[in-house]
Every structure is written in C-alpha cells, then in structure tokens.
Amino acid sequence: MMKISLLSTFLTISLLFTACSKEKKEDANSMLSTNEFVLTSLAKKQYIVKKSADGFSVDGAEGKVILLDIFATWCPPCQAEASHLASLQKKYKDSLLILGITVENNIADSKLEQFRSSYSAEYTLVNSNENSRIIDAVATKLKLGHNFGIPLMVIYKDAKLINFYQGATEEEFIESDIKKALGK
Image 1: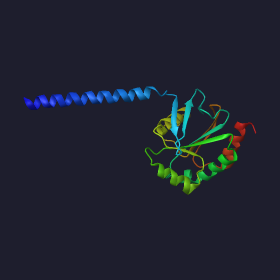
Image 2: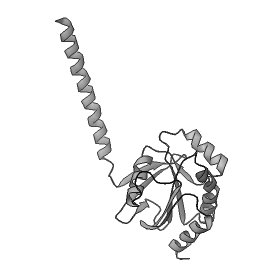
Image 3: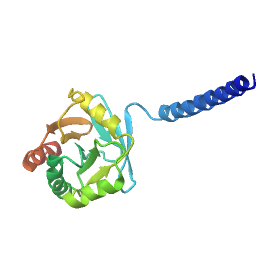
Image 4: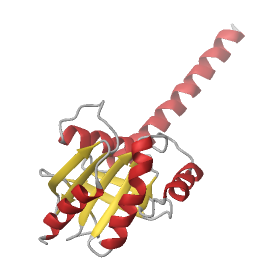
C-alpha cells in the first residue's frame, strides 16, 4: 500500500511539473508572431526578419537589398561562395545586408567562426534557434519543398522577391540582381 501511495504521489508531482513547463514554453512562443523570426549573429546582434505576403524584410534595414544565404559549413559550393558574398557586402556595404543562415542545427559558434576565417565570410552569420524555422518559411514561400539545394541565396528589396539561386552561382549574376534591385 505504501508503494502505491508513493508511486501515485511521484506521478502527480511529475505531471504537475510537466504541465507547468509546457505552459511556459507556449507562453514564450505566443509572444513571437508566426511571421517574425529573431536571428542572432555571431556578434550577438539580433535581427528581426518579418515575412509578408510578397517576401521577407529585416527591421532596421529598410531600403536595403536583403540577401538570405542558406548554407552549411561542410558544403563545398557554400564554402566557395563565401568570399564572393563578402566581396559584394563590402562593395554595397550601405545598401546590402547579407544574412548567412546555416542549415546545421545547434552548431557551435566556434565552428561558424572557423568557417568565417577559413573562407573569408565577412558578412553577418547567424546562429539561432530560429534558423530552421526561417529556412522552412523561405523554402515554402519559394515552393521548393524540404529537399532543396544549397547554397540557396534569396534576394529581397522592400519585402519583394528579386531572385533566388540554388547551388553555385557566379558573383556577376548576384551582383546584376543587386544592381537591378537598387535601380542601377
């Protein structure tokens, strides 16, 4: 009888704590809109990306061209593109924001820093719990499904899609779309 009573008490307490933790998690998620994503850079700066009917925008980057680079540190085409994206970021520094979003879940910041150092990825790299959620949203918006090629580079201006590329892409093609978006 004592064992049954003890077991019942233990189960009741376990269920109570489980319910509380789920409730807290739901409260935290309800604070974030399903159309907003908070991405944190390696420098610990937060970027709020908003999904609209036409595309994506970034708070504080109004009027800029936004390039979302969905990549992996182990991907050879992603490694090859990094220096080209850095070149474009430097050339269009006041009118372009590149956000490198890794597909790798729970990657260590040190691994992203190593990628940046090894491949001259001198643009914003984000490492956030929101990465997979925004990647899914972008792929869904582009009707690519879940198994799309990387790198996937998507260019937006004022939340409107300019163009997107899957796989290795020449820097000149990307620059041409950036110029087009800027009206040059």
